[in-house]
Image (cartoon, rainbow, N blue to C red):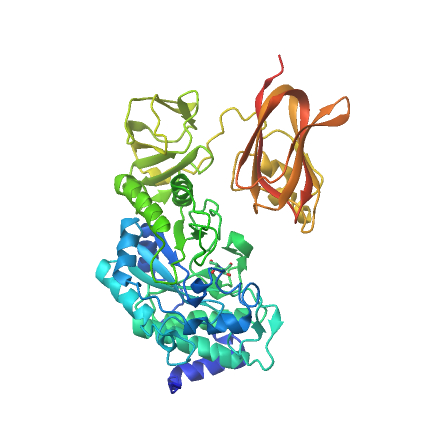
Length: 583
Ligand code: FHN
């Protein structure tokens, strides 16, 4: 059954031609009258207040349990992958059930992959046969899900891949965009992209967000990015568009660099973004490891999920937590149970999440904080063993302090800061509320010192600094007790060291290493300088998202983290030593 391709409207064809011909001069000369291509402030404020959404990566690939898009031509031969839709029949798919689960999890919006890099379209599209209507299932998933979202009061949004390794006109193919198509026609592919995205908005909109991805490949340009951004905003002026519509995103940190680049919010991926109240951002994270469904994939614990959520909102960002539904249409019971657990926690403490701003106490290993009006919400991840959490001084008076998670609380505010003593901290997250004599958002954000870390802000040296950008990536950035800054080394660096001078002999017995780009470090040593020689007192392998190592007491003044083997330029958020001045 071949579909008749609907002709695009005269106006948008002319606009598209102009942009393609004059390469975005349109936007250089400023937007067309009446629409300024900036996000609708109300839409942005509503979305930011929602704070927590469900990301869904789904398609015929779930029949294989391999990664969506990337496994095409890698684990799954292209022909086999592209024929999976003929078997795709998720009869247990129930859009209302998915929406009910998102609500039970405390999620306020939902973003589903309308089309991923593999080019398969999960809606009834007039522009291709490679869509859901060609499967034995033959039900329009975007139709059913967008309707269910409206019934359930969840904001419906769609993910859409710019790169399309399946479409003959898109220049690159599988595996991973590393092959070239025989007869590409990029302008015609861009027309297809414009047609389909308008089709989605017209048929299932209004959308909350059009969440683009796959913009990093060479065929996509800044000009195309601006043209698509303007096209989407013409289709729906109050829509939000992420920063992956254009070319400004800097890797997995997801931050856009450069005013000229389009996109309403940044998109850190598989990591919590850095604290930022000026630029909207949203971390996207898998609840397991893979984006699409994988049998027995490693599921994050409730604590991990809550810490990720609270670090994110404590950094003034949104969290888009991903599930990969099964080929039969159900969301895997394990994942669903975890989501309900998160929802039960939010039912109790969600007032400290929804509609709040991040800070003033910046996220760290201690925990995170949010604020709303004259209230600060504190979420302590690991209550200090000595029983008292010490917060730095703030230019406001605490009028009341409450231990929301139950038990006795003694507190004191002095010019040295706020001391909160709790005998029975919550084994999961200890939640407190501080009432102030003024607007909490007016308090400048401040770091919370890690108790007992004797290496903080001590002189540091390193064997290599990324592009010699010492200010931004120097060794002192790894000992400043701020997990928003990091020491970084040049790409391709496989061995490097970071040295701290404790400015006097100290006895240490514990170290903490927090790796950025977890997984690069494969082997490391901890060393102490003894009589001019570096002596190894601890050997380790992987580091990852925060590693504590304990060892018998070592007495010295200078200590080194020596990275013996790394897959690429190792980079460290924080390196901390714990101990005391030598007796
Ligand atoms: O390649 C995709 C990946 O499959 C997934 O969709 C994530 C979600 O943000 N984005 C890309 C990787 O950056």
